[in-house]
Image 1 (tube, rainbow, N blue to C red):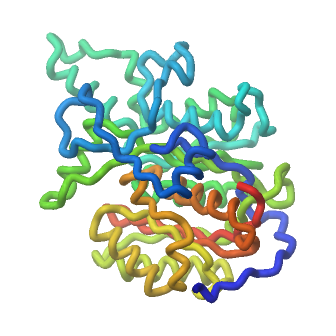
Image 2 (image 1 turned 90 degrees about the vertical axis):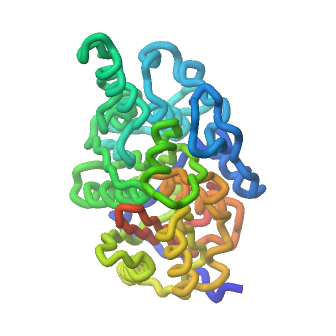
Length: 374
């Protein structure tokens, strides 16, 4: 059993960033309730991919069930919408609206959006390029899809949908994107440039994405890919309008330039814990990204060596969702909050979330769980 001890609750400094809400669109379903229930039950999410996608390197995928874009978002402006943008919009609705579509979160002109991605909608980009080669003329392309090909479209569409006028940013960092986005929001809020933030990351499943991931790791089996979007509402502790679910004590990033992910994760995690002012033995729960790669395996080994044995077993493995790419870290935080929301012993405990990407990005965040029902 873990030796991690709960820290007595103490008032947070008013400028501490806190998470006061979260949403998840995942292979378990369209909401955070389905996400939490699926993780608790340990249900696998892999299904046979839709034959309409064409040949794939792997016949299975972990896709969001029942994801009908026009059925969920309406017909206006969605006829050519890419799946990535739609995932972000549905997740933002789940964070800001109730089941009847009424706004439940108050925002102002300084409420921002920062969304982490890998490279936008790869399916949309490749289809557009294909048209330029296969049509009678290179310029005979579907111009209506051009806006959806920009990297910042999903974040911009989210802000437009909900009237959010604060800083709007897209961070492209692969599996580390969710933590990079959280760090970005934390920094801008500390500088007074935003009062609160919608923070998260998203990844879509597509044939183009599947083949890209397969060819990016020659000699390795085709990965089981997933998709989804996780979003967090981040505010200052002193002005938060809802009870905080977790305080963001630190976020650290680095780049593995020595091709030694074990050492990079260890150093990043130690630095994050030092910045948070907590010891490795205080970590109650740890959630690696579970990337299906050598870096992912090294990440798990590094956390196993550094942290109490029980820490890595308190939150179900992200392997259940498949490789959700850029959405990973935000869904990992959602998983921690879901686990804390069903465990009364979580109050005051420390959680560590980590991520590694094939391009060498490494990130870790340290959270203090506040024990509220997630």
